[in-house]
Length: 428
Image (tube, rainbow, N blue to C red; front, top):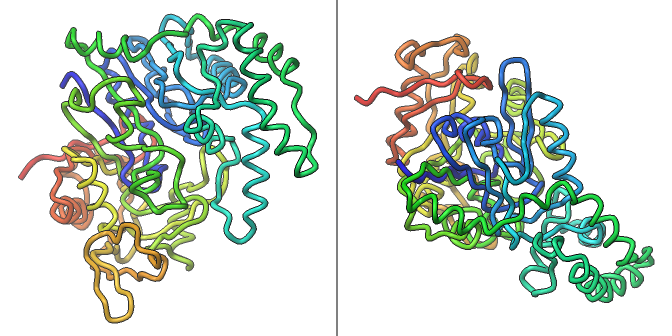
């Protein structure tokens, strides 16, 4: 299909990087359209393991042009480090050739990172659990029309003028909490020097993308985080700062969402979450610890241990519905090997009330307890299976069960971190 969009179906960390890397083999363009370096996508190529945070996951394919769209917030210092890191691993990314960056993408500046950390500290027990990367404050400036954009870097005079204007407000805040103010002129000079290698990438990426779609090129839209972290549709306020689903694709990529031919959701065979916020199926026992150990569940961006639990089909059905999912790709099935039983949450209970649909916006969502369906587990390690038919019967039944619950086909199952550790599910 000419245009596909890959989204996370849970609270992020679903394995989108691997899926996007695989689909990028047949793509002409990969377009990152939301988030910042709070997201982390991991791609394993042989004995090389890459973690990308701002770079689209198509950078590992020579034939792909990678676009960072206007909906992304960019930390220029981090992006430079990321380019250096992938180049050390033998991956050549050249701004202006296979990497292009929207002039309309907003910048994350040092005061955003400082304010992010300070605000989280001031929240005390009500902390959100942010990554501290300045994402929220950068999006806040975008919404209040006080932000600086990537295109400003092309004009030093404009850059200096806007930094001086922005610094007035930021320094008042910093000084009010007894913090050192930022020198906008020194910051301007540092930005000009740091971003020099990136300027060749500056472009109207929306126009590039629309032109590619009009030609019939293969375009792959890459979402960040997961739908349960969407600022409007997720577990607010414990969410990211932007729309991560189809509602964020239009402005985030500069194209109409109607141009997308297929929406692919990616979900783990269990659930994880990083940071604060409700998580109905979280396990605080040996099983949760075992899932974390087998799944190597530590944040790609922060290194924090992830909270782990059984698959939440209530949240997964909700994600499929709000995204209009055409397909669901299931990852990390191998992690569930050796469990005597596997559970899927089909509903929630609160007191005498049973809820079968996601209780969006409910003020006491943290009080809902999962109602599980219990399935038999499987003892065999499955990472070496070559076909879906080779999986243990219990593993195949688990996949079919999920498919029937969410009423979305599962055409692909991942059984390990490597590119080729995927199984195509035969229709029955």
